[in-house]
Length: 165
Image 1 (spheres, rainbow, N blue to C red):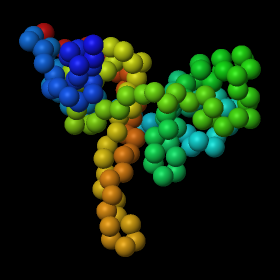
Image 2 (image 1 turned 120 degrees about the vertical axis):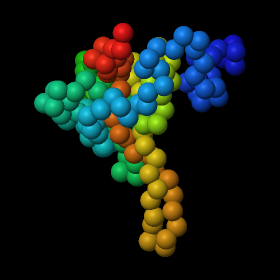
Image 3 (image 1 turned 90 degrees about the horizontal axis):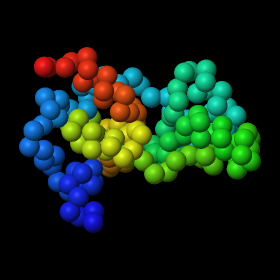
Image 4 (image 1 turned 90 degrees about the vertical axis):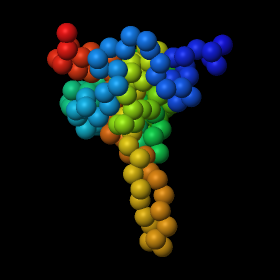
């Protein structure tokens, strides 16, 4: 059951990371990974254009974000290509037709331990940052900004480069 699974509880923010023998990197913040700025696609980008952009820029995946800032999901090169080749999508379809809408988010202030728990089940996490914005009448609202995409390879690279044996 999920409510007694510590990893599920940590991933969903109901429990702080509890591990008796934490590795040295466990409590380091996600922001220390020095992630590069993500390539972001708008929802109206066609599957054809998404494939071209991802290949040209050397990315395997990219978040799909509406102009409002709403994160719609993640598109991957392999899923886009396989969907088009299988006939489930056309090259002319908007990229939203092949977008994964199940994804995990993690904040810059969250720990690498929490990230590690997420990456045990997910191939990636979208790194987000909350930013306060004000509109014309002076009222404020919080907007989530995509700061990066992090994979297990990013975590492994950080740990191996900074190993404190």
